[in-house]
Length: 347
Image (cartoon, rainbow, N blue to C red; front, top):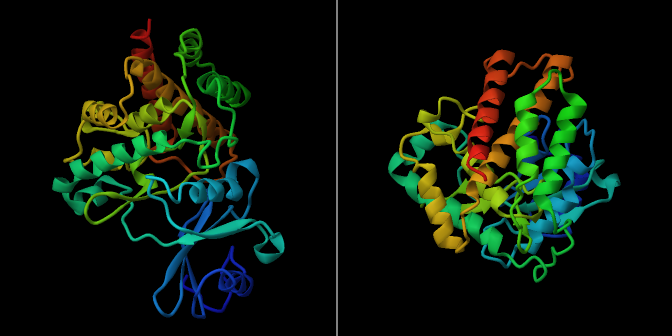
């Protein structure tokens, strides 16, 4: 794309340039290159002729649900974490005046680093460096969970109590509303978990989608910045731990919960090591981890079941899931089975 003064789909170049010039030092003309798009928030790399760079985030062009792409929420979380131990980009500003760019958007500093989106990229980064990447990833998650939400001004970001109960209710409701087939095993795991929810303790900051490919990795293997805060809320932080473990696909699993799972590369530690590092960094009791692992697999299966129903109904257009619909069903079945295995260990 790299369009300087012309049209860039999703960006009013003149208006955004003027808005940014009022908030930071820059030279013109600015260039805007789309980094990520599709059904998710649009992410642009913005650069000026001197080499300075920023990142602009805005909702999708054909936005449906305002709450699903809340720019103000993302901006608020990143800004609040600026002086914490959590690595986040510096914030330039947030614009909710839709006359500037049709939708709310925010701009942050560009952080150099690599997003490891596939096993091939992880291997190219260096298998000898992947243990250090993993340890930094886990220690950064622990830093997120140590944040005093009231001190940083995020104490009212969401309801603090009953996080797991609300999640179980929400995702079962989503499944029931969109299901294309009966899934008694999925409902059975839900019912088992509802009766056995551990005491949450004090609420912490839950990223909501914490995984390797939502972080920027610096050349030394440390986490340079945590990205994609759109699902961030308050609640039980062990849900983040279990979610990371669920996404942490390894060759011996026999399936991957997501396409192109980067952790399939040689060199990554196994899940047991992640848990040990998290316990060391956080000091938290992990006795109930099987409950959270069951919940995380169940939640992802419920989410994917909803996506599958949209494919079946044609709501996703001509887009086919990788491997076809049958492979998608196999992935959901494997997650439900995994949720059941962990649930059996929860008395």
